[in-house]
Image 1 (cartoon, helix red, strand yellow):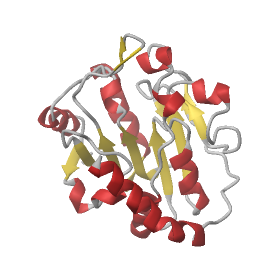
Image 2 (image 1 turned 45 degrees about the vertical axis):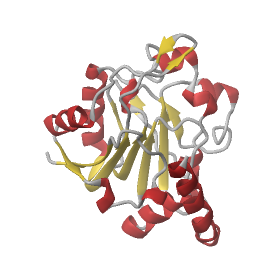
Image 3 (image 1 turned 30 degrees about the horizontal axis):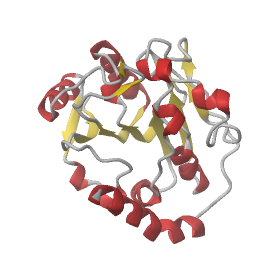
Image 4 (image 1 turned 180 degrees about the vertical axis):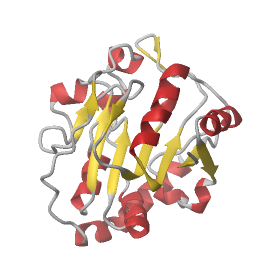
Length: 232
C-alpha cells in the first residue's frame, strides 16, 4: 500500500509538468511486423484478464524519461489499455504499445479507439519495427511467458532497442490465477531472472540508478525490478 501511495503521489505532483508540456500527438503510424498478431496460446488471452482491467500510468515516469532522453521513441510491451503509451505521445514522444490479447481492441477500451500506435502482437514470437526505441518497458509481463517465449522476446528487444536504449522490467515469482487458469508461466527468483537476462545478451543495472520509487509505474513485491542494457 505504501508503494502504491508513493506512486500516486508522484503522479499527482508531476501532473502540472505533464499538462504544461503537452504537444500534438504524432500522426505517424509505426507498424509492427509480425506473423502472430494475437497470443492465442497465452493464458492471459484465454481469460482476458489483465488487458481487461489494467489502466495504469504514471506521469512521473514519463517526466523522468523525457528529462533523460528528450522526446524520443518509447515501446511498452503488454500495454493493456494503452494509457501509458498515449501519455508519452501526449508530450511529444513517438510512442508504441503492443498487447498480446485483442480484448481491449475489440471492446474499444481505453486509448484503443483513438490512438493509432497500439497494436496486438504475440511478443513471445518474432516481431520487428522499422524504428528503434530508447525506452522499452515490460511492467509485470515477462512472468506470463514460457521460457521459450522469454528467450524470443529478448531477441525481439535486441532488434528494436537503440544503442543507448534501456529495457525496464518488473516481474514477480508468485502464483496468479484467474478463472482457474494459472497466468504466471515462469515463477523465478531475482537471481534466476538475472541469469537469464545476462545469458541472452543483456547487462543488468540497479534500477535505483535510473528511477526513484515514485517514478516507477509498477513495483515488484520481491524486488525483481531490472534495467537492462544490450551487451551485444
